[in-house]
Figure 1 (spheres, rainbow, N blue to C red):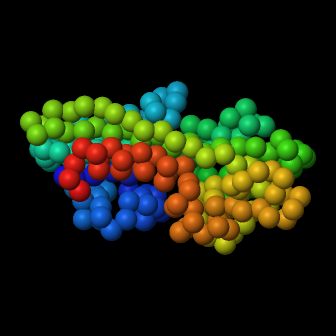
Figure 2 (cartoon, rainbow, N blue to C red; figure 1 turned 135 degrees about the horizontal axis):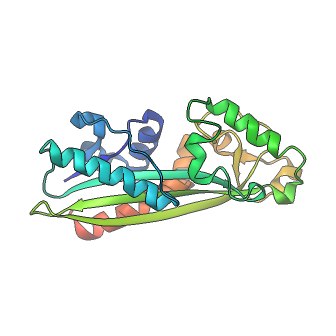
Length: 218
């Protein structure tokens, strides 16, 4: 069995491998490990649709290259930050917010600027991750499935640069009342080990792991 992820994002894969742990380390592959490089157009209207677009694109490429094996799992992740005050933006456009060539720090600064006069109680936000998975059976037939999970939090009032990637420096877990208490805990502040226990991606992956351990002798 192989878990083949439709990404070459090193930061994302570091998180995924840490969340899955030692038990899975020898069966986790990036698409680049199989000499596959795809960049499908993500024109879906939901996280689930975009994740499945990536999963299907990887499946078709692996199939065309005759690299599909029985019991493979082709996995694609679509994740986004949804800010309530911004009507759910950047949402499915999180990776492409302000244009895909815009640096992440610029994106974080822009969101903070858009939120600069927003009172504490209206700074709520959440992260969502959808895992789209194509399961390959023993006869190499595909079946689609998905898992989705999220975590509630809020947008901090400044960038915390102590670690993490993406929107980690501005997304805080907990309740907005923590702002007044001076107890803001962004993903960056709590550190990767703690983040990978509670994050949106960890929750989605844990649902997948529950499925795997129920259906395979891992």
